[in-house]
Amino acid sequence: MIYNNMIKKLVDEIRKVLLAEVKEATQNDKKCPPAATDALLNTKNRNKAIKKLGYGPANPGLPNKEFWQKKSEMWDDIPTSEAKTMLCGNCAAFDISPHMRKCIKGGLDEAVGGEETINAGQLGYCHMHKFKCAAKRTCDTWVAGGPIKK
Image (cartoon, rainbow, N blue to C red; front, top):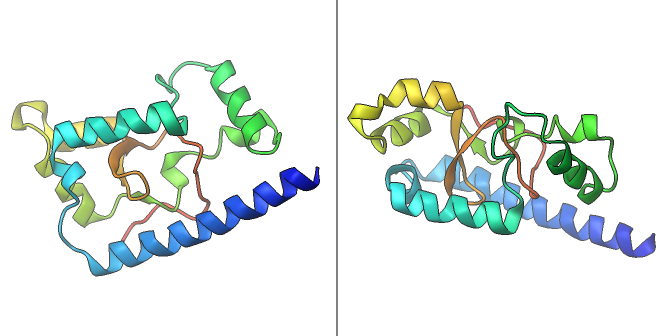
C-alpha cells in the first residue's frame, strides 16, 4: 500500500508539471502544432498513444467493459462508473479552442468536410501526446480540469 501511495504521489507530481507545460504552450504559442495539420504525424502519435498510453476505447459507442475495467484498476481501483467519466473531453490537455479548431480543420482534406468531421468526432488536440483526439476517449495520463476553451 505504501508503494502504491508513493507511485500515486509521483504520478500526481508528473501531471502537475505536464499541466503547467500545457498551459504555457497554449498561452504562448499561437502557431498550429505540426500534428494538428499533418495527418501522418498525427497518426504516428495517436498510434503511440494507443500502444503505450492506453488511448481508447476503439469504439466509444460500445460498452467496452474490459477496457474500462483496466482503467478502473490502473487508476487505483476507482469504480468503473467513475473511470468512464475521465475522458479526453474533460482532460486539462484537451484543446478545443477556436484557434485549435482552425488548426485541426486546416489539416483535414476539403473532401472530408472539416467542420463536420470535427463535430462528429468531437475532436480536440491533446497537447500532452501531440495528436488530434476524440472527446469520448481517454488515456492513462488523464488530468482533471479541462478542456482548454480559450
